[in-house]
Length: 91
Image 1 (cartoon, rainbow, N blue to C red):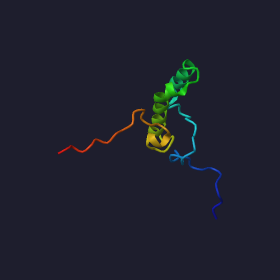
Image 2 (cartoon, one colour):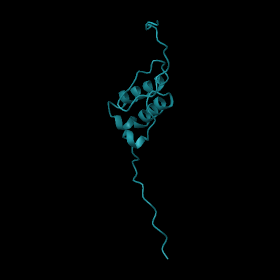
Image 3 (cartoon, rainbow, N blue to C red):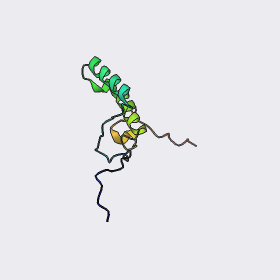
Image 4 (cartoon, rainbow, N blue to C red):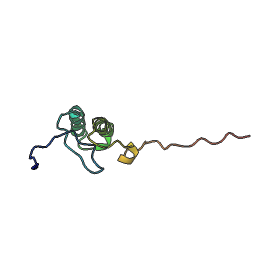
């Protein structure tokens, strides 16, 4: 008869569902956080000036399995210049 063991085998979790933001316990993206916080302080809280650093931080999280990979356009990052489709050549 096998009784349940209180010991469980732990493994690295799968990337979380959207909306979940696990801690970066290994500090994989700590340098990105520091750079972003320094930028925010220098920009007096104007996060638009620091968007590239925020994007780099999210990329780091995706690269290290701390969040599900997604398109940056789905994460609120949009090109500042509108993309236009080329016109067909005239005859």
